[in-house]
Length: 70
Image (cartoon, rainbow, N blue to C red; front, top):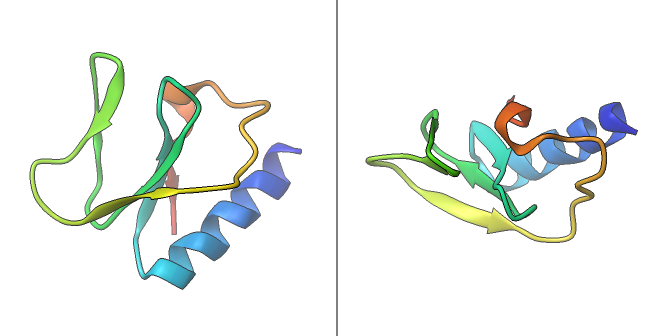
C-alpha cells in the first residue's frame, strides 16, 4: 500500500514539475518546489512554489514521516 502511494505521489510530482511532496497533519498532501521543513504541526517552505495535491490515499503514513522526493 505504502509503495503504491509513493508511486502515485511521484507521478503527481512529475505532472506538476515539483520535487517534493508531504502529507500534512490533517491528512492533506502538498507538493513543493523546494525541500520543506517539518515545523510544529505542518510542512513549511520560506520560498518557492507549493500546491495541494487532491485524491491521494493517506493510509499507512505518519505525516511527520511522509516526505517523498522525486
